[in-house]
Image 1: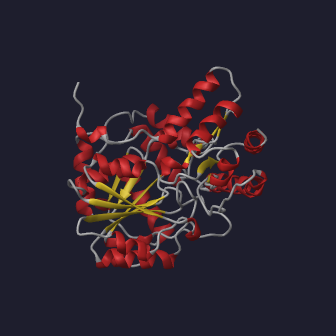
Image 2: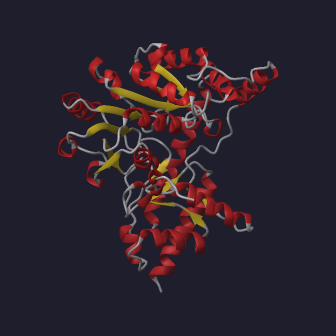
Image 3: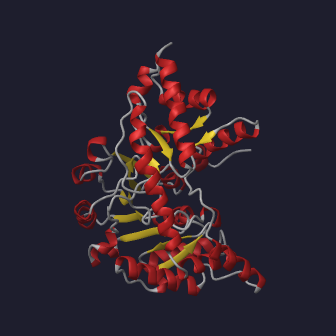
Length: 395
């Protein structure tokens, strides 16, 4: 069997690999604490579950329009107006099988072979791989710890070439939880305007913001920036609907039309039942969204200071999402490791704590910890990590 070149150059998802290993150990009866999952630990709210069930009872089990149910698109339209004062026509909105599928389809329609996409690191693991699958070239810019892992205008200018097609902005960020300010976005946006670069704004964590920080979409800063921005969002993180697979892309109608054409030959339409569930998510009370956000914030404020009981660990406090992204270079060195990936492997095998190594996100000295789990488990996990480190230090 001969495989296509495009699939031989991509790497498997680090997060899914670690999660699978943790699950395997759990199935062996071991007391594993998994801090790798990128999904809320709450069940989907009841009114959404009930709406999904009712939609099936009412016979809504057939194909829909490729770009999504008109009612759902209108609700997305309303959400964008209410949240960010952004006006879009229905032709500028496509509903997809998750935000990941929206991104994948977007890269398929905007990239030709050799086109470059600027990807700030630390990055979500799938950005570079999706660019490669579209035969594009991911150009990585390192967001430095000293700048809260965000790129600077100077870095962006240096990375631009005649082949630069797009820039990805993920704010709040997975894995760092950091947020770009309005001023930072405006500077970056103006550079993209000057160089005719498309902005891909991944805003999937926009509802998970803490400590009175503020989310700003780069598209809302000016009409000119709106015209060169494609917003990616969905209900996975905000409404705890990761498995329902509903996301969307919003932007230039030519791009959205091309995405719809591709989707018509690949997925036909987003899952009908999940679309009706999402209608309920947007039509119903948003109290559930705030309750989950508040719970994540409480966990963060309790767990964050406890991290520093682990020798050598350094960590910026995240402003959003539900991840901690500590630098453990010194910690690993104290333990006798030069390779953080190996440190992560031994931590899972010896203390049964699953975390994600930073190498999957483009930085070798970090690990990602998800606090989308109970406080008891989080505290237990930190105690186990501390025990692991002290044991290695005392060898």
